[in-house]
Length: 220
Image (cartoon, rainbow, N blue to C red; front, top):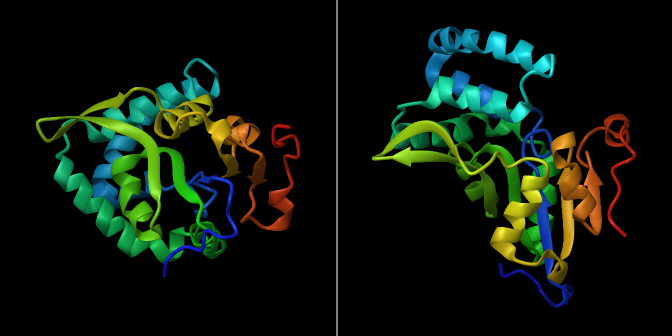
């Protein structure tokens, strides 16, 4: 069915955070556990204990911790292997990972004729099957690939906080040409939500969690 654009004269850009917004929880760590298996995952994740403590003591930023996580697990990994695992992960975990209300919310934005995209800090290679199944675009953290192998490095910066707005501008240009609608659930989404004319904080969560942080307001 073709989207009905007759009720959408203004260009509407609808942007959804993924982890915690469309899902019940983070997807990247569960994906790594699924891809590598419990034994290999446990052996690798133990290397993150010290960096995690450093992050808790603010000696390491969240972005730096993310870089350590990616280097630990994905350095030298075959790109096609990771893509195959991502497809399998999406197929198996979709029912238990995705919020039904979130999936319906995305479908409603597509149906109304909006330009719809996920904007997430999780790696694009992991989220691509989810975006394809939802039938929307994807903007997320890109991993460096050389000769079919992951180097363990991030291309550019982690797609979080102000980087979400910058990445949207890189893809869509001046955001003022759109009526920006945004959905998010953590501090990493504040800049995106504040740039939107129509901001939704934990919109698909239970009511108590939905209104816990009322300081997230749309820009006038």
